[in-house]
Image (cartoon, rainbow, N blue to C red; front, side, top):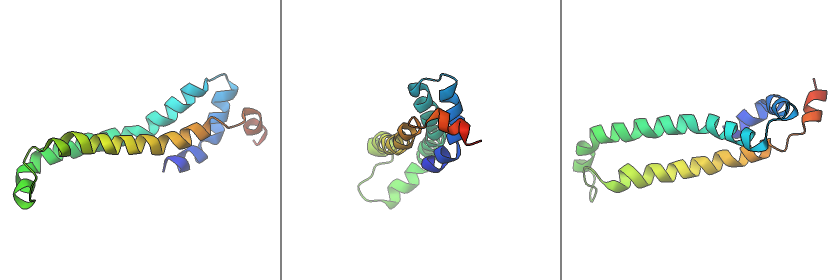
Length: 105
């Protein structure tokens, strides 16, 4: 999804680079756009899990109602995977040639 988003905004990224944006700024912008839904989804997931954890604990063997693995480690792991998946297209976005982007219009 991030790769598709970056491919659709190549012109915008090229214009930002042509106007003097730093490559770190472009990477940070792409990462922030990609990680906003991940952060919101992770927060909603942890809150919903907290609400139904007692029910789930009675259904699952070996998992407590407030298992630290479920509340801390799993969201952190998913955040790390999403960060890596977003970083690769973000880094590729900085390779856009601003002159070529402006010529294509």
